[in-house]
Structure formats: C-alpha cells, structure tokens
Image (cartoon, rainbow, N blue to C red):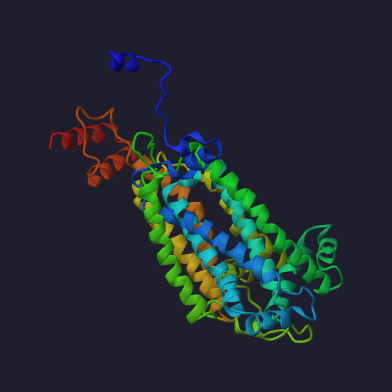
Length: 435
C-alpha cells in the first residue's frame, strides 16, 4: 500500500531532462548547435560553413597576438614585421598562420558560396544577404590587412585600390583625400587602415551571429532543395563528427602552408620595403582578388572597369531574384549544372589571368572570360525556365502517365506544338502513351 500511495503522490519529484535543456543560458547554445535539427542528407560541402567559423577564430586570435608587436608607422611597420619573424618567440609561425589564414578563409568562402549557388541556398534571402554582407566585410578586412606589412606590393596595392574611389562622381576626389589623410598614401593612411583592420572583425562577429540566427530560425537547406522537416537528425553526433573530419583535412593543408611553403600563395615583392619612388612592373592584389582584378583590367575605361568589377561582386545580391525554377537545387536541372561549372571555370581562369602580365594574349583572354562570367550568371535563370518548360507534363494530351525520361517524346511534342500542329501533337502523345 505504501508503494501504491507513493506512485500516486503528486508531490514526488518529477523527472527532468538533461541539464543542457533546463539551464536557460546553456539551452540557447544547445538549441543552436547540440540538438539543432539538421536535414539527414547534408553532404561534405556543408562542412565549409563550420570551417569558416574556425578560420574566423584563428584570425581573431593570431591577429590579436600580432597586434602586440606591430607598429603602425610608415618608418617602422616593415621593420616591426621583420622583428616578429626573427625575434619574437614563434613569431614566424604566428605571422604565417595569420597570413595564410586569410587564404584559407577565402578558399572556404568561395566553396561556401559555390555550394549555395548549386543547391539553391540563396532562396532563404535573409540568410543569403547577411552572407553576402559578410563576404564584402571579409574582402575589406583582407585588403586592409594586406597593406599593413608596408612592403612594396602592400604600398602600391593600397595606392591602386584606393584610387578607385576617384571614379565616384562629385565626391570621388574628396573621399580619396580623406581616406589617404594627405595627397598620397602616407603614414595617416596606414594608421587609419590599421584601426579599421582591428575593429572590423568585431563587426564581422556580430554579422556572423545574425547570419546563424536567421539560418537556425528556418533550418538548413539540403542537397535536394526541398522541405526536410520530417527528415532531420540532431547536429550532434551526426554532423559534429563530419565537421571534425573537415577540420582535420583543413589542418593538414593549413599546416603545410604555414610550416612547409608559407609563400605558396603570397608575393615575394612584399619582402621589399615600400618605396614610393619605384613602381613595380606588375601591381597585383592577393590571389583571392585576382578574378575581380582581371575583370577590372579587361576594360580599358577606368570608371567602366571599376563599375564592372564592383558589379561582379555585388551581383550576388541579385541571385535570389534571378531564380526562375520550380525547384531550388540544380540537381534537377542538367542544363544549369553545365552553366554552373562554366561559371566556376571562368572564375578560376580569371584568377589565373589576373596573375599574368598585362599583354597579349592575356588581355583578350581576360575580356572573353569576363563575358563568359557574366553570361553564365545571366543564362542561369533562362536555362531554369527553359528546362521547366521542356519537362512540363502534357496532361491535357494523354490518357495515362508518360515517363518523363522519354526525352525524344517531349522534344517531338514541343516541336509539333511550335509549328501549330496541335492534332499531330495529340496523336503523337497518345501513341507514345500506349507504347
């Protein structure tokens, strides 16, 4: 009887869930990462998002440590970098981590953007727009950091890039002088760039949290681009293991760059101190800006080149509005898969062209590849529409379902309709449906 009374005792302690679900502060992190419902079919391309978080942490920590030894002055900046490399304990490794970390950052960014374009992640417009904001902030941060060593390429790269402000109508020259803090790139420019380079990462962290907040509000996309609310698994352990494997692969390549070949993605001219009286033969940015630089120099008009280069980046804002397909993922659109890989090929080729001298045949190749780059972006919505129309099911013409794999049937059907042979089209459809 005592046991029965206890069983119905309403004052008995109730069973509670795990502590991560009861603690209010921990519950926020738990719902965002540990128990976050994720589509069951995410592939390895989704790991680049978490790799970007790892890159951001690496850059923040290494940059903070480097700032303790760096001197933002035109007479001492280059020497302070040499001091870090030679005299600071493990300073060479710290500097190589920060310098090559930016390259790894952009490798992951470009893979992340490519995955979003291929699988239709841009259809979640809020998440996509915050991602593009982050991309632009990262580009600005990388440019500012590139000028800080105050080497020969840093100085002239800053001169060329900041001169683009002069193409702005009315206020261009005034903006340029304000950014420089004088009549040319000088000590005031270096101090301003260093201040912005130190502060921008904190803005980026805030935007990252907004990006993740809106992403977790609706949930991740998946390779099929369809709703996956009923086919989800918790983030841990299914995707923590996958992300850890991605971190290991990332670390192998990253450590190769840091310890074995730190100048593989760098420029040897930056080991010469800045000399305002001697212009390098070929002024070029870091490799991750080469595609935009190749587009810039492919147009002989200064203002036109700057505008088109800027358009090649901000066109990402237009991608969601250009989508005309019935499905999000390109796995349902063979034509668009070809267009996508043409876009990727033109991007890689433009990156290569940007590192070549400004002479033939690289000039004409850069112009052709620039046309291909923009054409592939414009052809994407058209090919989506064409493929959807091609695969429209002619329900009004047949008495039973037709296998959509019969491409021959569809092609003849559309051709007959195009030449206004409605009766022949119906006869062909009925004939094929009885086969």
